[in-house]
Amino acid sequence: MSSTLPARPPFGREVRASAILAAPLVLGHLATGLISFVDSVIAGHHGTDTLASVSVGTAMFWLPVMIPMGTLMALPAAVSQLDGGARRHEIGALFRQALWLSVGLGLLLFAFMTVATAVLEPMGIAAGIRPGAEAFLRGIRWGVPALTLYLCMRYLCDGLHWTLPTMLFGFGGLLLLVPIGYTLTWGLFGLPELGAGGLGLASAAMMWAQALAFALYLWRSPRFAQLNLFERFDGPDWPAIRGLLATGLPVGVTVAMEGGLFITTALLIGRLGEIPAAAHQIAINVAALCFMIPMGLAEATTVRVGHALGRSDASGVRRAAFAGYTIMLGTQLGSALLLLAGNEFVVGFYTADAAVAALAASLLLYAAAFQFPDGIQVLSAGALRGLKDTRVPMVLAAIAYWGIGMPLGAGLGLGLGWGPKGMWIGLIAGLSFAAVLLSSRFLRASAPQRLKLPATGA
Image (spheres, rainbow, N blue to C red):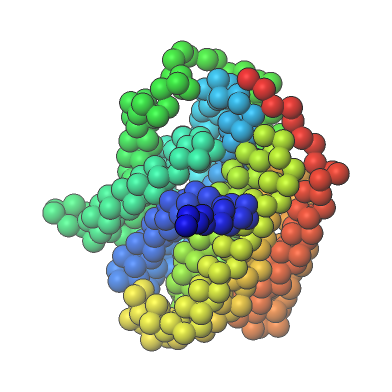
């Protein structure tokens, strides 16, 4: 007597496909997050003043970087829709225009970094922190053009459901950063001891190594041969670049507003002195590592939603998003439990300063509280990107992060004197409102009667 197993339900298949796509992305993001971990650990063991300087320097670096990072996130959605709509022959030309966009964004960001050090004193950053923060920024700015090129190549692969390079090049860069960062910070092998500035230079060197290795991989890999990515030189096609900007720039602004909520918090805490700044750097770095998981899931959801939209599958759009939500809720539960139960253990990796460790461990309890809203809001934003719905989410994010989160945090932390803990309450509030607004937006935008389904074709 023969028997057959029941077919896997469509939602189960979608969860599995999303998990397979997201796993390398999550690991790649973790590798990126571990860069800040490495910087923080090296800086923390070099000295509390070095750790505080890297905290402020990192904040001043990542705040503007988030705009081109988010802007280039238009590429995975566009590539996945072309792939889903049987228009792969158009991907190469689109990629070449995205390279022009990434070059322009990288040069603008380099120019900004060059003058950014001048604002540290007017911002009220403590005098003992400023020299190291300035040195960090002067070093890391040289890697910015490489970073934007790397992101462009990475997002191309992500949009094609090929996320393994994100993981491999991410960890490859990390392996390079550890010895170079330690050598330049401490001044080994006869080199000068550069402290925070050495970490900035090491990060820049790592970014160029990643970008060059990724370009070589795309050029030589048979997987991309049919796309003709480098078959000819295309000058800037301004309509194509404007199309990427129209979708991507609101994403960049949204990502910058969310990141800015965290980064401005770091800069405001930097006004309180070295111990609060160092403790916040530890806590926010741990929270950022946890955030890499839902961020990778969100990017996978963007691709899955975009692919479903490209093939005109209305039910598949929501199925892809709900699969992402399902995985995200499980991962965020694990992160929250880790932060609640292991906060003191984790902090021990960063510092031996008892005062810094105690404050950082207490802040991680607040980080545990925003794991679920943080996951929901970033997953919702990723699903909306798959629909190329980016302008309204930008406004909603502005309301949540800067209309609610930042005023509340600044009022409690600085106005009422609650210090870093008051600022972190503001983070929780801003992320919670963003979760409600963005998830509601996706449910409305993904309703079958509201979807604008493209016609597929060769």
